[in-house]
Image (cartoon, rainbow, N blue to C red; front, side):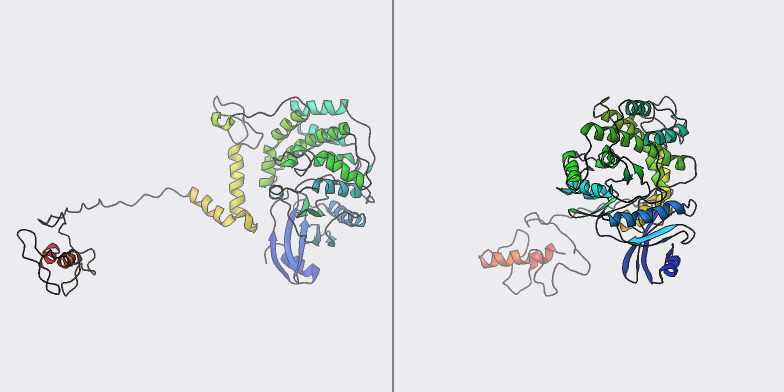
Length: 457
């Protein structure tokens, strides 16, 4: 059994079946399987980067959330060592998490329900070890570590410091409550997932994070693509929460956009440094400039516009993000487009995912085919020009032709049928039994048809 199947069987004392790794997840592995027929989920750290304290904290948060009425999967077990990595096992919930699939169907009332869930989440009892730092200072520390000044990021930091509101409270904050980390089945949320970024902080942070433009996935509705802010705040108030003022919510939206830009750059560093060739980290590096544009939109410093594809004017881009020749600046951050394509190719050829939605076998065949040398086409013989059959005089333009197929003669052995046979018989029926000039007269029905036999010689 591939993957952690043997370790799971020993840990749970059950028969493990249908074990496969799920797509997605930039920091932890996620596996689906059944144990004696019970559908479960395994989350574990990569063996090369274990964090047992964070995994234990997430398990404790799941229990605390369940006690507060937050929909979460039931915790089955957790520990520090499953096949060399910290892990937690939980029940598998029904529903969908992929945002673009969720947004294909309108879900009225979901934004209000999300507000109610957040109100209950903000009543959770804290668990030991939760980070408790100033959010703006912590973000600036992350940013300064790159030593990579970015004008849009500097503008956002300045605006946030100048317009910072007073705290609205101090509670447990999920830290990543958004479309993509919510299991949704029809009109209901069945589970809040991925608690690894939870901390103590202002509850308005979760509300603003859910409204960040990146989590709308092209939808015009600001609350994760599901509905308006008014519904979110109304649901939050109905469940006992104190909704923030509009300007406070806007501040946290700008903060969330800045935070996502820096988190993208932080995750991309793992790919750019060569520490992890994962395609997820490579893709996140390309999103940094998108978040910078979203920040400028949120601050009112730019407006949406349709621009021509800059790749059409880009002559060459090297593997490090620089340009070749007189080409303009690359339209995205690192990695460059060729490097990103290499990461995609590596993922297709080497990935262990068995998720049918990825259609990896077909993709692998196409990638391998693209690397094969072109095959020389075989030499084709010139077509043979068919001889034009001669006309038979007096037979209304009919041509002398041979049989269409060697096993299928045009005439039967008894002389009846074939070309001209039925027509001659029709002429007999109408009393026209004279033959064309130069040919014998047509005989009565049942006797050899001389005209037809000459036609088919």
